[in-house]
Length: 110
Image (tube, rainbow, N blue to C red; front, side, top):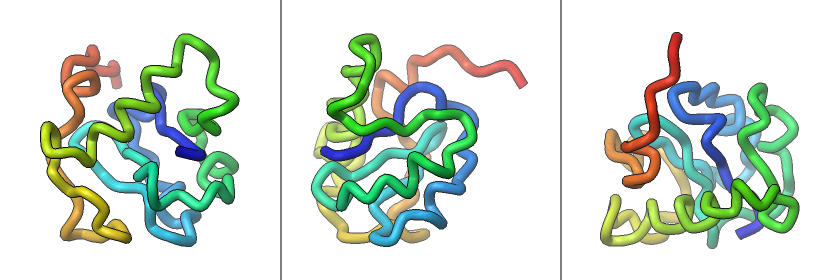
């Protein structure tokens, strides 16, 4: 998984990364966005436009954020959304559900 979205996106969802992604590998959940691990082409465009620095290359994640690799991956699995590998985000792949870690995250004031 070249890039992952971390907790800084929760309750923010700026969505600038959606426009920047040339392969539509960023999917929208209820409280945050998720990068599909098998669809990301490691271009880094999403990271450059994120206003809250929520997106990181998986090999440059600070240790305290490494759990987000699995959060992004598991979001697409049968235990969370069951999306599998739809090969491109669009309105049909938007879900109101989140990974359990995100769902349990304290709400951001604002």
